Amino acid sequence: MSSKTTFSLVFYINRTKEKQNGECPVMLRININGEKVALRLKRFILPEQWDPARYQMKGRTKEAKVFNEYLEAVRIRAHQKYNDLLMLQEEVLATDLRDAILGVNSAKARTIIDIWQDHVDGLQKLIGKENTYATYQKHNTAKNHFQKFLQKYYRVNDVSIKAVDHHMIQQYNMYLKTEKGCNSNTATKFLQNLKRITCISMRNGWLLKDPFVGISMSIKEVDRPYLTMEEIQTLIDFDSNLERLKRVRDIFIFSCYTGLAYIDVKKLKKAEVEGSDELGYWIRTRRQKTDARANIPLLAIPMDIINNYCRLDLLMPEDPILPVLSNQKVNAYLKELADLCGIHKELTFHVARHSFATSVTMTNGVPMETVSKMLGHKNMKSTQHYARIVDQKVGEDMKLLAAKLKGGRSIVFNQTS
Image (cartoon, rainbow, N blue to C red; front, side, top):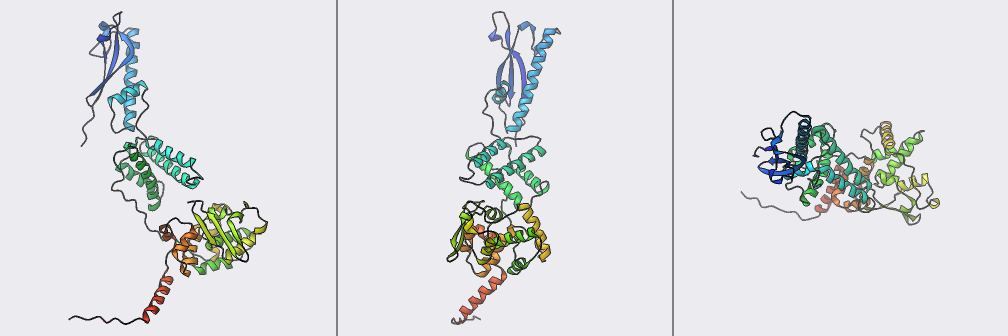
């Protein structure tokens, strides 16, 4: 249990530093938890004019009024600086307050938003080298969410990194889930961003204890929607006089058969499509999100879509392959398509990537390692989130196993009484 903080200010005169004219400098003694420091003020006074009981100049003259108003202003400034330091530090030393009043010693406690901003600035400088714009944007958004939380619950724009404790993290988690409307996994990802900053702080010695001890950071398994081959075929068979719907349908089906995310389809250019009519074509690209390489053989359906919108032999290396609309419009039109095709699933562009992993590849016997390579994943764990072994595939695999075991020897178990 922490002891009560003691804090006091006392004005006095230093008689040992008397000037030739008899005046003594006025001093301010700061006492915090028994630690005392003194600083000299820019005022001098004759000892007989000083009131040691009231800590000010005697009398009611104009000179005394101006002198005492200065001392009161110093006292108010000292209290303000003390309260400011309390917002930034767990413990305020007398020397900290002295330096704050004097406006010296800029080596103050590190604050979380400053540390976070340094981290974000570093990510921004490395865009295109070690990370992507999406990574920078994600961390910057997380920082902004936490700063808005501080403004709402603590009425400040920043706090000392030492002020980030278990209770504050729990409050932030509740803020994300209630006022920001984040689901459990999204809130956890924002907490992971915050934990990255606390880890940086601990490595640098700015934070001594891990405030995340005892806080669960696990991501819950989510059943991500995907289309069956029958539903994909329904979209392929769809016909409309509205060009916008047919174009969005084509781009979506292209992703269903290549596994490319929206941004990767949008940025796909001629230089990333290699091959020939005789040997077949491949997409060889790097994912925008992770910069991981994805090598995808083009099947007949996505190749037909490309040929429907362009002639590869006439394109320059940097020319885009497909006419992709904005992400907002694509997802709006996909919902319209789902209604028209009788597909009762929330259709977004990312569903195409899940459909590629599950229905187009895994269900048809493509090994997960191969699917992972085509999706551009850096590890198999990422692929497992996309590719579910559906019941149909499990059933077919077990039938094959049963057929193999059928020709084997019977095993007779000895029964014991």
